[in-house]
Length: 186
Image (cartoon, rainbow, N blue to C red):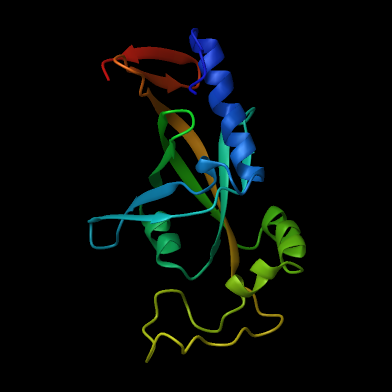
């Protein structure tokens, strides 16, 4: 059942609460948003990512990636991106326009790698071959190389949110900036 939020302040608070929950709860629908970027060929490119961190006070989102992945090169050339979240439970779609900074070897990336390297996810960042590299068949993944990691952070500064609530017979939509709110036609 959708939440009965009325004021822009209540809705904004609930959006950040849901994002924070999603970064910690593997079962939250917003845990796996779509990240859209501009490809190196100028075409749109989108992929599902895992939301790893949220800082409501700083209005930032965080994901992890392999530093050699195509999205890192795309974001280096065009650091504007868009996250799309959908929750059937809430009946909410949230589109979040962000400006991205890639952190490959900064203190925060190194500190988080110290945690990740002891998890099952560590192998995602230890492969000797870059993501997207052609391979002979579906079973020929390259083995991880101990000690050499390609872990990177995608830090996303929220510029604008577009919130849509699908209701029975009545939909609501708003555009949210850091310090502004505007109701718009759904």
